Each structure stands twice: as C-alpha cells, then as structure tokens.
Length: 299
Image 1 (cartoon, one colour):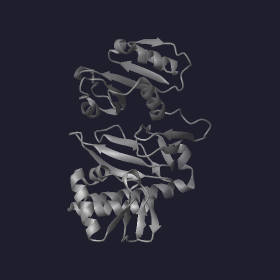
Image 2 (cartoon, one colour; image 1 turned 180 degrees about the vertical axis):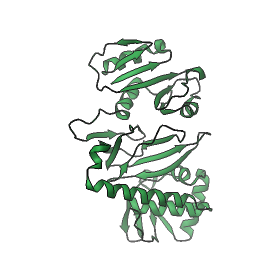
Image 3 (spheres, helix red, strand yellow; image 1 turned 45 degrees about the horizontal axis):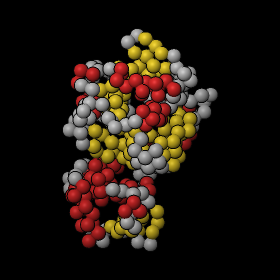
Image 4 (cartoon, helix red, strand yellow; image 1 turned 90 degrees about the vertical axis):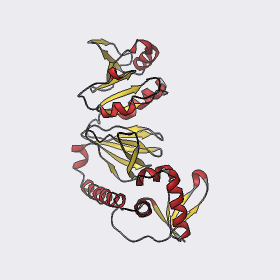
C-alpha cells in the first residue's frame, strides 16, 4: 500500500519507521522511500499530519487526516475540507497502522471476496466501487454535522449490505458498533449475485422507514419508531414481546432521534410506565423488550 505523507513528519520519525516496517511504501515531496516488506497494494492514500489550519488541504476529497493539534481541534474542520477519515491525537502508531489496514483493505483478487474483521469502534472506509456484506456483528452509520454532533442513520447486522458514500459534504462515517466480521466485494462481483438485488431492496425499505421515524414531530414517537425498526432487525421472540438482542446505550438512541442522553432516559421511563417497553439485564447486558410490535416488511 502506498501512503503519500503530507505535513511535517520529521517529528514523527518513529511512526514513519513503523509504517515502513509494516510494509507501506511512503511518498512525500516528490521522494519515495523503499518499503521493507514490499507494498501491499497499488492504491495510493493521502495521509495528512494536521498540526495547524494551514495543514488542511483545499478542494480535495477522500483524504485521511491525523489530528495531532494540541487540543484535537482540527477534526471537524478536516471533515469540512473533504477528509474521509480523521484519526484522533492519542492514537498510537500500532493503532494507526491497524486502522489503515482495515480502512483500505487489499483489493479482492481472482473474483473472490476479501474477509475483513473490525474491532469495536473501528472506522470503516469503503472505496466507491466496494460493497461490504456483514457476516456477523453490527455496523453503525453516522452523519457528522458542522457543530460536531453525530446523528445515527442506521444499524446494519448479519446478512445486510453496507454501501460506500461519495466524498462530499455529508460527512458520513461507518463505525463498527460491535466486533464485525464481513466480506468485501467489488461492485461487479456482488452485482452478479441474484440475492444482491433483494438485499438492496431490503436496505432501501429500511432506510426509508428509518427516515420516516426520524421525521416524527415528537421525540417519544421518534424513539418508539426507531425501537420498532431495531426490533425488526435484531428482535427475538420473548414471552413479553420482542427482545432487541443488542446493547442500546442511551447516548446511541439520543444520536438517533436528535436529543440528549437525559431526554432519552426520561422518554424510556415514560414508555415503561405506559407498558410499551421493558428491560432485562443490567449494564452491558441490558436489553430492551418491546411489548407491542406491529408487523411490517421493512427487513
């Protein structure tokens, strides 16, 4: 894999050495360093070291940034300037290398899909002609607004497809919500599979239903609508209703309905009082049970 380094990397010499030892070919200022283990891919990635505002590229899309500014204040500006992914200041070189391998996997060879594994909270990047089929785990999609707030736009689990988003001003981010195992296809590969059309149709139904739920004027209706959709995707029959077999933090639900965590806590309590919702377990094992679930065909 080729990395084009931008910025003042002379103060990150140890990271540069680690990148070389990990098999990357490095380029900057018109010069190339030989890779110790050989490059992994013919693809090239622009990696910007962000210290101050002048380090931000202009009129460029799809680049990768590492925000090493004193307060980590350049992340939002980087996304506004067209970054595909921005790594935080505290990331180690090992974490950086591992993330780069996951974000930009080796191109599929001989028509075979590439198996990928992503740890929790890993940012996932897809090229324009790539499609990810989730084998196990859950991927979350977020829109990052200009004020830094995130809006959850969907959760995708086993058997569902995750598509790339153009490098535009939407600032869409794919994140591994749980440990994820997935298969990476190029578009021509997966488009030949008959079941792919059905997967796209289900994805479209679900996306439209999610948008409809988020458009509800009252927060409680938004929350209940999102929970019903999650019950369709991840629900299991339960004596009390449908158990959503996925840990849903109040912060995650808040990002889905455009509210704060305190409001979500109050809304969930109201739904419990009305007999529409129950909980089982505690902490990381807490699960929600919808006691009244209407039939639908979104999934």
